[in-house]
Image (cartoon, rainbow, N blue to C red; front, side, top):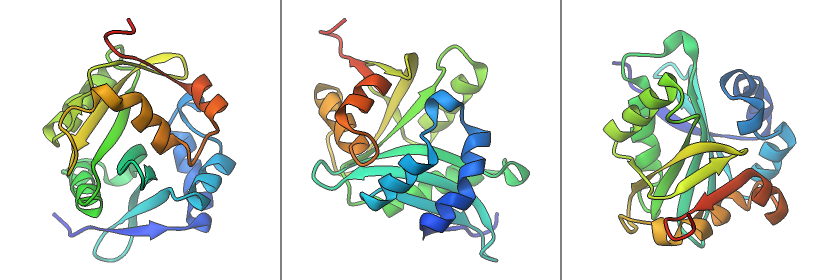
Length: 190
């Protein structure tokens, strides 16, 4: 397998990558480009997966909050022409190393368990160390599986999940916009 590394992208990279985001994600789960650009100004990171020849192979838009110590792997993709062969798992490993000193990494699997693709993604993330968070999670009004990889933080973040999710999304959305996008029901809420 070729050797991969991560480089941090900037605003021009976000503009260039955004059409791929449009290809990879539905309108309801994808932020607008200006929201991505604003998030970069407020601390989010665009990570670019590159091979040993420095050719770009994928991207991940990461929302994070230094105060809470958590990161949301918001949108990740390996480019279609090179998918397979363990590249996605390698990208996740590199992301885990990149954020090794943080509390943990969250991610959302949309349309789970309804779609077979979502069930495969959930299994893929579980093979890479992520676990389901014990809550009902809705993104854009659709049931979504929230997953978590503990790094330095607690193994179970369900008791504080609402504040953690709010903290990582605050670089992209105001409180009202976030309330329209994300709904979390813990067991005692249901």
